Amino acid sequence: MFEALASDPRVRQRRSGAPDPDGRCVVYWMQRAQRAADNAALDLAIEAGNTLRKPVVVFFGLHAFVERANLRHYRFLLEGLPELAEALERRGVGFVLRRFPEHRLLPFLDEVKPALVVGDENPLRQTEGWRRTIAAGLRVPLWTVDADVVVPSALLLKEQYAARTIRPRIHARLSEQLVTPKAPRAAVRWRAPRGLHRLRPSLALLDGFPCDRSVAPVSDFTGGRAEGRRRLRAFVRRRLDTYEADRNHPERDGTSGLSPYLHFGQLGPREVARAVQDAAGSHAGAAAFLEQLIVRRELAVNFVTFNPRYDSLDACEPWALHTLGRHARDRRPVLYTADQLEAAETHDPLWNAAQRQMVESGWMHGYVRMYWAKKILEWTRRPDEAFDLAVVLNDRYLLDGRDPNGYANIAWAIGGKHDRPWPERPVTGTIRWMSFASTSKKFDAKAYIERWSGRSEDPPLRTRARGQRLEAKGYP
Image (cartoon, rainbow, N blue to C red; front, top):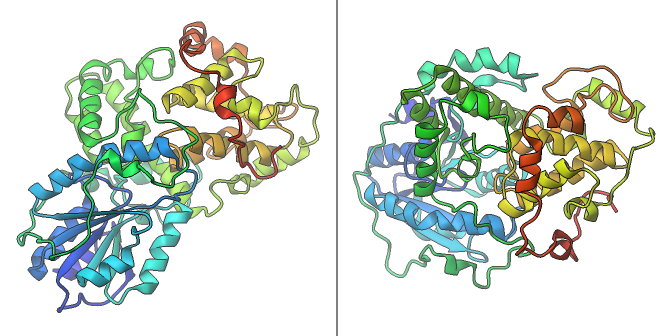
């Protein structure tokens, strides 16, 4: 049984060996996949527990210093934890929540004495480092599960050059991977040992929590699986049929708006894909959406998984680095400081609207994200500074920041990643160029600009940004 579980391509044995027969439980160290349904890591932990006839408990440690995370992100995360705890209870699984400074996994494992530890995969540098540290400190096996992609990253073997190279590899695996999970229940219900410290999930956990509080929560999005599923149902019913036509119109509400819920793992990509497949509606709309959800999203995950320099210009292709190097000393049409860009104080009303949408709503439409990043390249002194600044702004304000999708988008826009050379121009070289005039013709830019021209009740962005200096490498 354990051989079959371990041979699943989603499973990575970070510390091998047989489960400890004297262990009291199976622990699932939950981080990225914050849900109790369509979660391959949770399902594996329950199957392992049932095989061993041991209970399963989920441990969630609220870390105060996740790279570039702030109050906006922590609030969204915590909004989803109460319903998570209830859903785990319905599957017979325990839930232990602790926050900094008592958030560490290893002391908790010493208390509960597990037979096996299961985790979920996250290819970002900081979280990958945590997994390696935990594996080195354990005396029982540690298995991590690739639970937030449809096709396991291990099956793709290496970094893929572009969508055209990854698409056939993903499509060849979809029938075997895009399935309804078994969703087993724990055969042995977990009972907390007497005196075990655990916290009740609520927003009160933010009181006194020493996270970055310089960016406020937003009202446009509420965290949690129930809200994510409500948005998914609304998208399938009302917008899927027109998705192909509307998805590149930022002035319309034509997209799903699910990226924050996918980023925090409150929804899983398989369940979203199945909901779209099962919907009666436009085949073209479904095909266009699944291309974005699976092929494009998993191209980004592949990029971050196999390219350790994913959040810097160095991750981009030699042709792009060469052309940007040749034009690094070109005269820029205008130069803006980091503070000016953060406060949306440029001459370009479309760029300012995109920046305001990001700062005020915690989300930015995918089409204007491309334009937004490309203009940063034009308006900064060097390409590497532009890349670093785009990463900081992306991660700081977007609810779906600190995510492979964001890094891949910036790498595409600034460094030509997953793209090809275009006719040469000053400053950008052969990197694909986007202008205000050409971009504005593709959708109702006036309506979009008016929508995000600034809310009268809000303080100016400059006021909110004062004293919150961006930490882009070497940027003024």
